[in-house]
Image (cartoon, rainbow, N blue to C red; front, side, top):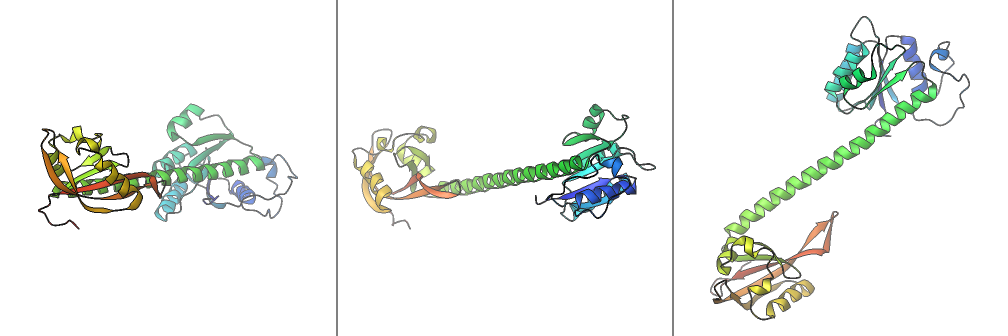
Length: 296
């Protein structure tokens, strides 16, 4: 439980002291108000998490604490909010303003009255809100705090994963855009295919040489462009032995015309779950006329 920050709003300072006594062990001493908050006088001592507790007596102060926590990048995981805190704004309005500032915080509305309905509370706070009735037991307070902090951590992990995924998608999109522009500007022909010989990408030069539209080339067996079985042997050699340079091949376009080209190729392994995987590799073939200089 990394984020253990708990904000408590209650106009009764003695009740705030009880919250502190429960959430920040060890318990210093018994309180005469224990009967108000605790049902068991002799709770069995045991290992329990310790929380970083901030207490305020007025709603406006609680809202300000949330604002400061975000400014300092030390958000609260949850808040206990008493519904009645005269003379300032009540707990529901405090919670509404807190929710406007921080959409991640878990809120527990604590009340001994029935002046706010569950529907009204839910409609106001929107999500991640619970209604708790006084008196609360020690175990109830601990469980509410622990569950809320754990849930906040789980949510934060999901948020980080989503952010990383969005960043990776954006980076891949930028890289793809860059490669597409680079491929389009090259005078040599480029054909990208699977290790089984199905074309997955091409560039304008290769498209012109083939006489096919780009959409017709995608998914086409590369052997359809190269008569004979030599292209299959070339792909196999690249996959199993590594890069190949300047092998003469005949390419046949859509009209049946044949041209001599030099073929160079290499294999590119794609990342899968953060690691390069030969099982998700592609073969890149570079095609140029014999009269052109070797491509680097």
